[in-house]
Length: 317
Figure 1 (cartoon, rainbow, N blue to C red):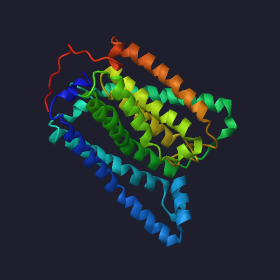
Figure 2 (cartoon, rainbow, N blue to C red; figure 1 turned 45 degrees about the vertical axis):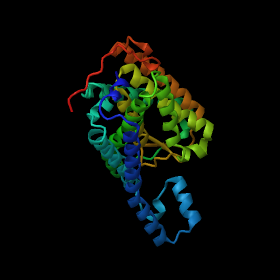
Figure 3 (cartoon, rainbow, N blue to C red; figure 1 turned 180 degrees about the vertical axis):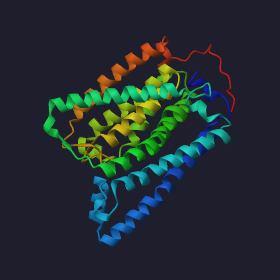
């Protein structure tokens, strides 16, 4: 049902093309304020092109008097605008209830969002504890009450908008749209997972860990979120997982090459990407097992086969 709901409303190819162009344009334009502020501050400090590029690579703007929290807000605003624009395009261009990008019924099951968030946050913390026990000297405490409190508020207000935009765009809009072209759910699952990975290609982690390792992680995360979406026939669990991932990274543990430089509680001096991938696989298996038991997933064929006998009903707008 999750993929088949895209057959309702205006689902011509041109509607998808126009929507994507509008959304991408809105996100790019929303990045202008950060770029202008950066150029102005860099000019004030007399930084040359090389120094500016190095600062962008490290995502550390302290040399130009931009706090980490301010940079985070400026970086997340474009995602919030992108979410709003996508929502409006689906309603008025596709003539669909935008909530059907989350659940084909048109009603969001918030208990699933919170379950996904809580369980994934717990599993992530458990994996982190294992890493700490393996190499405790790798972690250093950098807790600062003032900046952390501001970061905590920003995380609760802004990160869910950023992660929701990415989930609704990739696992909702694009996966449903690509699903119109094929009766094989694994095709949109694979394509959106690769697209999700490529979206993170410019992140500093790619240069730090190598394209192979970094893309394996990002594509793997995309595949996990897409698989859970298909198995549960809704996006709520994926919304919770993605929000938990980014909020955890912002609040609890950061590292030098992270795309997200925050005044987190701990800083890791070194990240072993192979450990991270192993931890992701372990947490994913645990999550799928527990969620399948809780929500009684009976049709495990949802990720590779569409039930053509399933009736599609257009929910109320």
